[in-house]
Length: 382
Image 1 (spheres, rainbow, N blue to C red):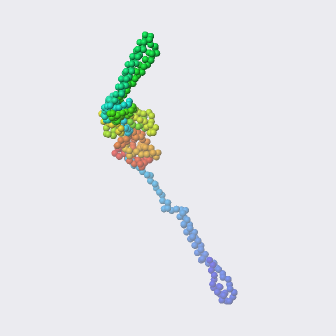
Image 2: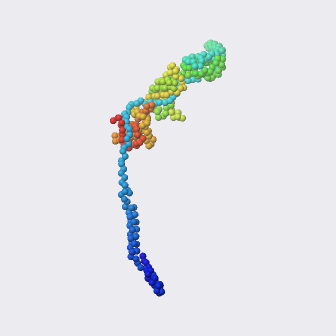
Image 3: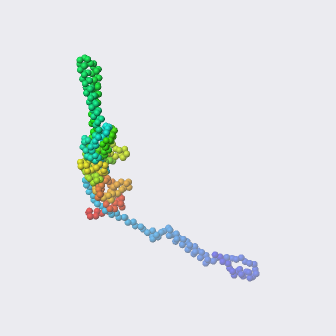
């Protein structure tokens, strides 16, 4: 920094001489202040920069991570047992035989001998047609047969004496055969005048009155046999091999009745609409207490399996949606076993797919995954 000397300049002006130029002289004190200020700026900048380059110990504290403790879960040891497997299905009770009775001839009904709801035996008479026309036909056929027989006998006698020809005998024989056939037809018609029960059963419907005219083939009533009953069920494809003819079955009817039956039929051709197979179970119904057409529940034992009894609440799904159970091995590691339900009860389910003896996670299975190490709690088991 330079400064002017005011004394020198004033003196020159007072003397009336020519003005002199100002002369700036260096100030040593001013120069020292400049150097001090520059040093301070450099020091401040260096100090501020040191905070970014050399972080302090307090700016980066050391983080210490603790190893998480294994999850504690409740575990129970399960022992497999032998359990009987069953096939269960809903079905319908059907009559053993069910038919519509029809008139085998035409004519007027002269007698009706049964009522709707009546039990009948095989061969019992249901109704009779008026036999008047048939009796007339029978008399005419008998007369014609007698005449044909006489002509045939005469023709043979004349042929033996050489008076008649063989052609006449043949013609007489044909006439006799025709008359015999007519008699047979009339006798058959006479049998058809009586309507009988084709088998033992109950008259379920009867649409028939005395004096009514019926044409051949007219339905007159329905005959049903419910001793025994047949219970029909539909069996899915995957269960077909579990059933066989002769297996015992327990049938519970919607009326509260319970009976024991036997499998009498297992289909070999599936229904195109449902892909199921028909199976039938015969049930004794001697007293006729169980009506046909009602619903029934069928339970068929199909064999034995070694299974564990579990509560449904401990069953879970893996990431693929497979039904299974989580267990613990000897290394306290979680394992997942896929299971199959073989029998269901109100208290729980019987499943296969597990070892004979296994430690099953009963509480906390939703918080652990396969392969994870856990802290098993056996409770009072140990």
